[in-house]
Image (cartoon, rainbow, N blue to C red; front, side):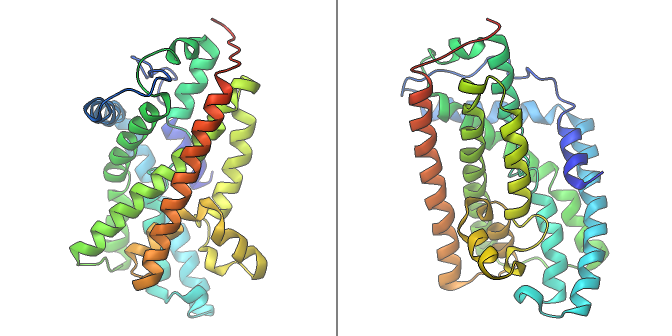
Length: 297
């Protein structure tokens, strides 16, 4: 079992239709207070799945040890590989393990809820409720991510500190920029997953598309290896794709591997992809709701 399979399996212990109230519709209304309430509700919802959370955190930690020892062997043989020293390489593993579920590299979260609503036909009702459909799910996903950053990110990080002595920055400014980078990473991830979820309007089941995107995300996000290790044109391609905004950039920020103009460029890259993907999601949604086909309801 891979770390992805173990964590995803723990995540999927949740019932399929946990979104009890359902999302609202396509009208552009909705206040900031509503979206704060949606995010807080999502945080509380995920906090109820205590067994799944503990199992997932333990899974991430176990595979963190496996990958950390693998990286130690690799960097001892090739010091300075990818521009990281040995300590940074090991820290990279633990930070990336802490972020995996937060940024939902393999999907899930609201995608499961939307897919279920396609199956039941509730999606037709959702589109006529008086709050923006995309903004509702983004708010819910930010609440989910906040919970997982705390609950699923803490144990792997502590394990890395205690077992390998990884050094975390002491500057509050670095942590603030890191949290901003994580926020942008979650938004980029949401934009990608929202587009995948919208394929259900035409396919009625987005599982096939999700499986393909999962493989791409695992490879190009920096989850398995820092993309700075990719050779030639593959590394150049990985650096400009949106998936590098999910793990590679936030991890580099916390490692202080990006500073000055490189840091600003990384945040700008995340912001640009977040804006593009959200705009594309709105365009695809507008196209989809013109021809809604509902099965099962």
